[in-house]
Every structure is written in structure tokens, then in C-alpha cells.
Length: 98
Image 1 (cartoon, rainbow, N blue to C red):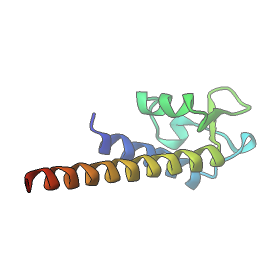
Image 2 (image 1 turned 45 degrees about the vertical axis):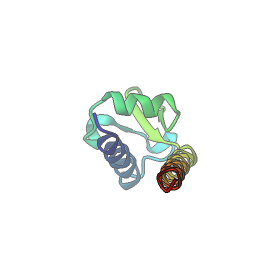
Image 3 (image 1 turned 135 degrees about the horizontal axis):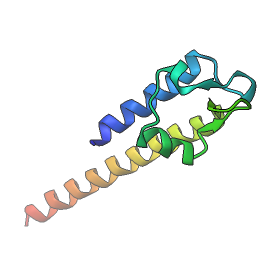
């Protein structure tokens, strides 16, 4: 799976929980209600405590704080990779001028 596909699916899952207002234990929904299959991507987000079990069996809700932190860390990582790539290009440019 490509990184872009994973990010698209992660965003889609979070969007579905937000639209269904499944953002606290009392409003938890089943994955079937949300149209989500328990994929590896979903389980990974569950492991990061973005999606938590609801009060009723087989229901889940999204922890909005954890979701925001997840998105923020993903953006920071992308920015750092961009800076690293830029630094490599600058070093290669400077070395090529010799």
C-alpha cells in the first residue's frame, strides 16, 4: 500500500466518524453503520487510541483530541521530510559546483 492511500483511508475513517457524530462513548457506532471494514489501517488507528470501543458491544467512537494530535504529528513529519529533502538538494548542488 502506498503512503498516499493510507493517508486517504485514515482521513476517510475520521471523516465518517465526525459526520456520524460518533465522538464520545454515548454516540459510538458500529463499523457496519459507518460503512467501515476493520482493515489493517483501521486497527492501526485503534492501536493509537484514535478509535476507541463504545459502551455497547461492537461499537466505536473517535477520540477527537487523539485524532487532532495524530494529524498534527503527521503534518510535522511531512514538513521535516520536506526540509530534509531540501537540505539534500542544497548539499548536492553545492557539491556539484566544485
